[in-house]
Length: 355
Image 1 (cartoon, rainbow, N blue to C red):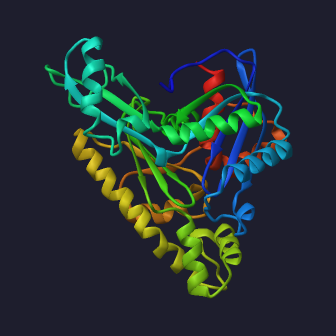
Image 2: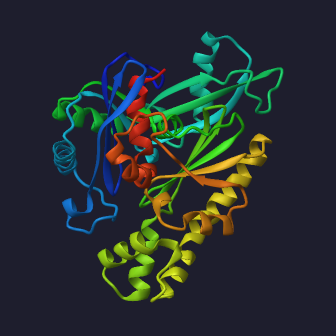
């Protein structure tokens, strides 16, 4: 088992988020009742593979190791107790309904049921499951109980284990992406919400009810699509297009109105899929989604809520991580801007330090 809910008391902790276009780290420390930000940082992976910043790339383990070592050095990371977020594409999370039996019988039943939901052989994953409290109203039935089923690819876990050993990290835990996001970016409601983590290459949707992740889904649209569309339409290099996206965002540039048009058109596949899946979730669980919370680097693009609201008709907001963390005054303005990018890494680090 990968022990999603294990926690040990420590004074300092690292949260590590290894994505396809960059790696993020957050180091926190506890002082009495306060959790304080020690350091944070991000390293783009594109240059390690000969491509531009912001582009997704599949690097070998040695290159990833090099990037993490450089990140730790630049950010002056000193702690060793670590939680690493598991790549969403290597995880499977789904709510299942099974007959109301005792846990001994469930242990026999779950692997049989799991074959209906996990698209690869069970020998290739580590699997865990837990009860949804009966207080969580998601279509209860007298003869059935709700179970959250989660699985992680063995190959991914083995790769993380090798990196951890080479990095010299200790007391290491792994956590499924959605749980880290919920911890750092509270929904401020007990009703159903949907987290939309917009990465460079893909976007991860995590359906949450009363702080329980019920379902996760990865869609193959990310913020990198806007960069590629800008590069093609404006006939500019990828790095120039990336700079334009980060500078002007969905609001565009007064001197070049095409930027706004291209950016908005590039957003429709992503937010159209969010709209479709949110409707599917509402029908599946017979629950209204109270709101949608945007996280990830794509949530930082200027004007994102404007284009979001043109396609998705559920109230949305951009996540504000670090609310539970004391941030040094000189960093507060920067953290407010970059916060959504670090939602996963921050949530990982918090796992070691809060109940």
